[in-house]
Amino acid sequence: MHYDVIVIGAGSMGIAAGYFLSKSGKKTLLVDSFNPPHNKGSHHGDTRIIRHAYGEGEEYVPLALKAQELWNDLEKVTGKQLFLQTGVLNVGHEKTNFIQNIISSSKAYSLPLEVLDSSEVNKRWPGIALPDKYIGCFEPTSGVLKCEECIKAYRELAERHGATILTNSKVKELSVNDKRVTVKIEDQTFNADALVVSAGAWSGSLLSILDLNLPLNPVRKTFAWFDANEDLYNYKNFPAFSFETSQGQYYGFPSINGSGLKVGRHDGGETINPDEAIPGFGEREEDTTDLRQFLHHYMPSTQQLKYGKTCMYTLTPDEDFIIDLHPNYSNVAIASGFSGHGFKFSSVVGQILSELIISGKTEQNISPFSINRFK
Ligand SMILES: Cc1cc2nc3c(=O)[nH]c(=O)nc-3n(C[C@H](O)[C@H](O)[C@H](O)COP(=O)(O)OP(=O)(O)OC[C@H]3O[C@@H](n4cnc5c(N)ncnc54)[C@H](O)[C@@H]3O)c2cc1C
Image 1 (cartoon, rainbow, N blue to C red):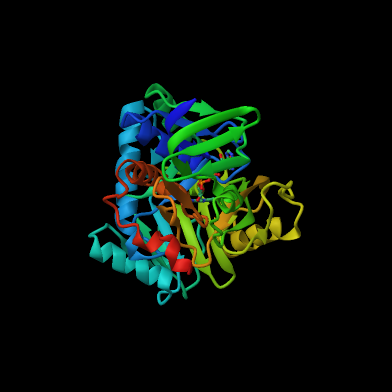
Image 2: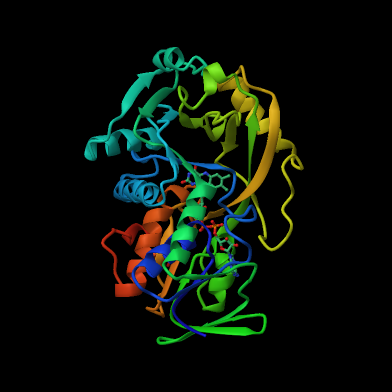
């Protein structure tokens, strides 16, 4: 069977690419090892934070703003609520790069941001106990994406635009030249003019088949929900948050429809092979001790664990993304290495991948995400 484009990996980035490609009239085949959204990759657990004033660097801001616009469009087209404008509270020492980047990007792009000292934070959100040494940067216009719902929404639209989605089908064999892509799954062979590789934690092994060895490090991550006092932590009056503390980097979500407070640790994590079984939540002592010590220090009224889960980050050495064309094949676009902060961008990354396939270029500045920075 011949297609214009084959997308390997129909998760966060791939399903959005599939939507934009099929909407542009491209005959698109998406292939996934599982049935997205699923809980085997990097996109499960109900919620993801979207921030606009970006602690990881000002170069991300135009992408974050475009991504938000595309999420708003997706809500309009589908009639589904995918984004909750809870606001996001970023906490850290005033002098850290993370906090300085947030403040400078809010100035450069005129983004609303309230810079609060610890007593102002504690007064406004009595569920927080912030020591004097930290400040809070509250971004009222950002918030929370319902991640699996976003993937479902793009999937429905992609199928409506004629995309074919082949689920529970792992790609093990592929070959590429300038004009033709061949993908083999079991006894079926599919051909296309172009290829998108958006295989999350598995991208490294797939790309090595195409002679591209990228420094990608898949790591095990854990997160958990805790019983929460709804008067203090309900999403109607408590924001999503990101804390850079001397004990580590933590993030979390308010209680949404009785979910409890969700907390995870961003830094650290054990390198894993995504093809092997990952130890479940609680199988490592630090899974719970890390989160409890964070809550003990900063949200002390919350300690009762409901349940936790594991997930994967795919880290690059600089924790910036990889969004680029294959250096040897101009008909292969790659999106990987989202280093634990990619979901919010998946709408715009899908659009970028579609533009790269259709015209070889994109309106967005993706130079910080190039493959040749690793040389
Ligand atoms: C616990 C946790 C919390 C996070 N919090 C945030 C947050 O608050 N905000 C934020 O912006 N980001 C966050 N992230 C990061 C974000 O979720 C990821 O960056 C993003 O989901 C990565 O998308 P992806 O498309 O690369 O991977 P995935 O969504 O995992 O998609 C990859 C897909 O490829 C498929 N695949 C792989 N190999 C093959 C193959 N050989 N054949 C066929 N299919 C294949 C997989 O089955 C999978 O469906 C978080 C991540 C985790 C784990």
